Image (tube, rainbow, N blue to C red; front, top):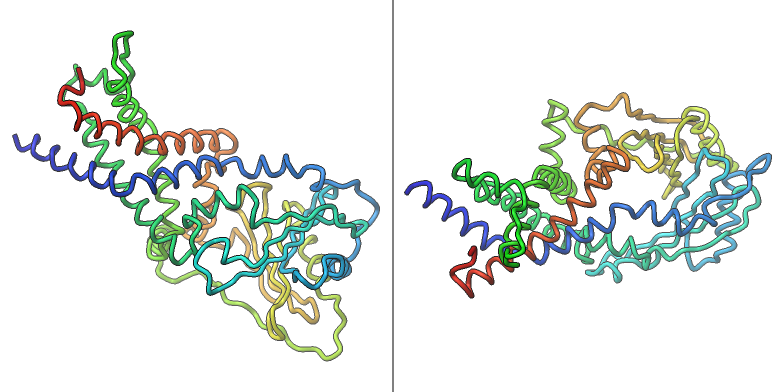
Length: 383
């Protein structure tokens, strides 16, 4: 009797949490499912602009920056550039400006452009409006429901917590009473006479069981972004210390009448140090004391191994370096969060698993709602 009462309470919790968060969970799951292969699709669509015919020598980065800025005009100001070690790849310059007072995604972005440039000639190959890019819209719908991060992400975060509770409560409800009922819980026992309501019930329970562990991993990695306190817990558990990582920035020393060669010196030094890496994101200094910041992505399509360099904006001198191998385990876990979240950490098989799991997660609120409607309409639901 006590067990029956316990399951009844769990069932009520599962039901009301599902009804209160089902729509948001569906949106988060289906957008996550769509976004898994965003990089592959984007690279395919932009293939003609991504690759160039290599020549003897690329133009200097500072020259390319000034040339690109001149070609796009003063309406958009360049913000950073992606450079690749692959000599057949074009450079991608980005122009981004946000509106701090906005509430929605579209209001928040004043402009967000990616400019593909041939590094050997300086010619602009194409300009894309990233604000209206399909996968960027999907990402921001997944990230914050197309609201400004500070408004939308808590909603997504708390809905994700509810989803984790529902997965756990669903597993408790699923757990069979005896060996006889266990068979039907692990596989579909459908016949020609099986009613659609029974099929819907099995889809909800059996598929939910099989993707439960993957879904929890996806959900927990999502919480790392949603809540700073959760990210801190993950970091402390992994690092074994409450001392945060060193994110301090160096300071540039002003040199009067300095020549604009620091950009090229920074790139040259970075290429020499990380010749086997995929590429670099180079961000210029924002004020007179700021530094040139370089983010190094070790592997194409993966972010768990990355390094950071800081250069003096006047002399190009290397001021600070943070290598992946020098980071503690907690920081490495945080760095790997995106790759785990989308399954990329396991390569293409991992992405396929994440895609299928996300698709099933999106189906759970729908099949669960149909179960609830069916029970309300007819008591003899399982016959």
